[in-house]
Length: 163
Ligand code: GDP
Ligand code: MG
Image (cartoon, rainbow, N blue to C red; front, side, top):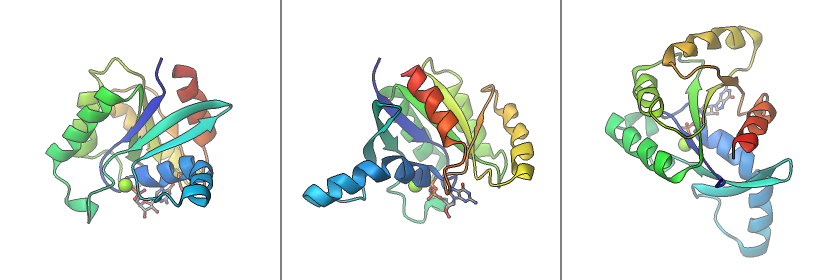
C-alpha cells in the first residue's frame, strides 16, 4: 500500500492548521538544513514509526471563502486519484453545509479509506454537536481540534493502520 494522505474539505474548516501541525517537526528540520520554504502543500510526517506524505488541498486560494464549488470538486478528484487515504474535514462550528454534502457525494463512491474528521471540537458541547455529520452518509467520524491537537492521535492511529 502507498503512503499518501490527502486532506480535503471546503475552505476554512481547518485543513491547513492540521497539515501544519502534522509536518511541523519535520519541516523545522528541513528548514534548518536547506532553507526550504514552508509555503507548500506537500509534507512528510510520521506516526508511531510509520512515515507518510500529507497533501494539503486548497492552500493556494486567496480569500478562501470565494472558492467555487467546481474548484473544490476538482481538488477532491485529484486527491482521490493521488492519495492512498483521504481525510475529509468538516467544521462543527458551521455544521453540515451544502459544499460538505457535495464532497461527501464524491467520496461515497471512493474505494480508498476516507476518514471523516470533524474539526474545531474544542469542548464537550461541540463533541455532542458532531453527531449531525452522520447525515453525510460516510459512517462514523473522528473529532479533533487542529489548533491544539486534541483527538489527532486516534485519527493518526486509524490512518497508519489503513495505509
Ligand atoms: P483551511 O481553509 O481549511 O485550510 O482552514 P485553516 O487551517 O486556514 O483554518 C481556518 C480557520 O479555522 C483559522 O482561523 C483557524 O485558526 C481556525 N481553526 C482551525 N482549527 C481549529 C480548531 O481546532 N478550533 C478552532 N476553534 N478553530 C480552528
Ligand atoms: Mg488551507
